[in-house]
Image (tube, rainbow, N blue to C red):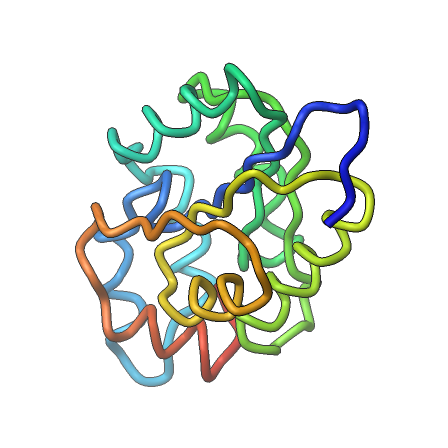
Length: 163
């Protein structure tokens, strides 16, 4: 992995790492899943204290980068949410609106691209498959296990490429 004179990067997922999605899981439990409502409710996510503390601590030594499976159409709401909760500034990498690949593929692709020019100090994510693949690729990972687990969200991340 490339090292430069720039500070290392700490990469943070959003959903169930920094943002509590529990209140919007109901939109994934119905058939068909209501993705528009799921993402429209994201601005109302409560921050997760453990994730917020870790991102703030990491910002003391690292540049913060946000890496989410949210679609690009959610960018404005996402930036507003980060700002409203006083989270450190940093670039936000989102999936394309039509990108339905599993989160572990899209996120690992972006991590590898970032690692070409920057040292990646850590990836913090709640998705076990993302974490497994990132570790196999040589990245240091913190598994965000502080949010309630959701089978529906896990299926969406892997099979439907939605978050």
